[in-house]
Length: 186
Image (cartoon, rainbow, N blue to C red):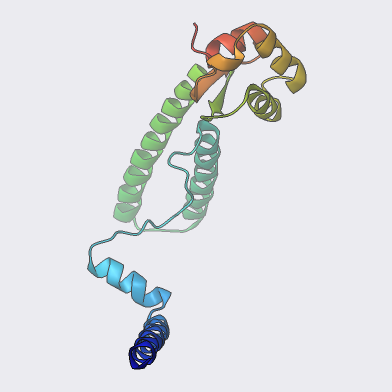
């Protein structure tokens, strides 16, 4: 009988001690202290956590156009300001160099987008059924009718052959072409 009460008392003590330690530990830990410790251990935090590794070419082209407009406005403002001769020549040289770099990168982007012109990117995720793939393709604007495309895939035996991955689908491609692309039969 005494052993039974001893074990109950010891178990209760262990549970209470665990609860007290959990509450004490939680009150001392907040996000700031965790981040501080992580930085001390060498963890590097990204400045922009968008989850997007690389922006699509369209976004890059839009950003480039905005940058060009901003630079033109700055150049117009600088032209309106009077400046000394030496400072103006140095500034003009730097502006010209920046403009040349900008023009070169603009050409690079436009060449890359011409290569991708007429194609849409589409990702087939692992484990999706053909009906889900068809629905996502319809939402992406690759096909017009998800049900008809799903029926085509199933009737022609492509349903079990879908391969996950990122694909470039030509604009206006027929169902057969699309099915061969996403099953890697080209």
